[in-house]
Amino acid sequence: MNDVMKLRFLAAPTDVSEDGVTVQAGRILEWIDQAAYACAVGYAGGYCVTAYVGNVHFTRPIRNGDLIEVTARIVHTGRTSMQVVVTVDAADVSKREFRPAMDCILAFVAMDEEKRPKPVKPWEASDAETAQLARWVEDRVEARAAIRDLMRAQKYTDAGTAPQEMFRFLASPTDVNWGGNAHGGIVMRWIDEVARACATRWSGRDSVAVYSGGIHFLNPIHIGDVVELEARLIHTGPHSMHIAVHVRARDPRSDSWRETTRCMSIFVTRDEDGHASPVPQWVPVNDEDRRLDDHALELILRRAEVPPLQFATERKY
Image (cartoon, rainbow, N blue to C red; front, side, top):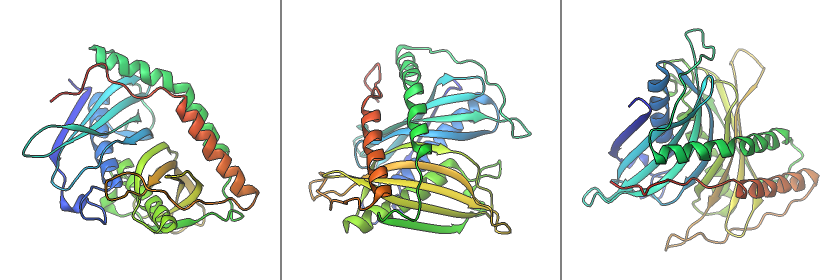
């Protein structure tokens, strides 16, 4: 079938984070984009662009040397768009007992040779599991649009006093797909890196992502663009740090920046048993701090109202 793509490989030493043991979230985000992109391109029969990534839940750590299976499947289509659910499962290579490690949803838009959206063939569910996933996607459409509008309405200025981290570099030829734009997975890895730096700086300990949501791709990043990523802590819970990330890019010959991506990620620190540890509490100082803190709380409530991703059948291998 051209509506399902499976990738299987071993997690490598180059995939792990600073602890030298577990795979960094940014690398996993690259994997899910690669599988979802291959699935979307196969279904559309041509070039596609990532438009949205959401509901990224990291449910268990992936370790160096684990056997990884990434499954991407089309679960819904619009006139030019495809919704793809991706699951990542990991296993000890000697035992081959796969366990869920991550799941999420991505939206792609099919493009013609002139880089304009083109129609895709309608998709229909072939079994109970994909039919349930399709209903889940449809149930999330309005909630996702509301969360997107909430995020777009927020202003981030120099008046904020919250901890921040900024990266700036040039997009290189190794970062792009055949369309000449940066891979969505590469951009998500950059986002994880700058957000993790911000969370680690605040907590004073190694931090890991447990959730990323509302990753909206607004404009492409081209080879040679100056890329700037800004991460800002906007809320802390007893064990969590909520980090807003904005990405923008510009041609080095121009002073005009264009916003390319925005998202919200949640980070934690872990104790020796792998449980989330208490984090230092950030206290808003001025009106902008309080507004963004309230914004994070509203997003928490909105996401709690969205039905969780559920599979009609247990994932077996």
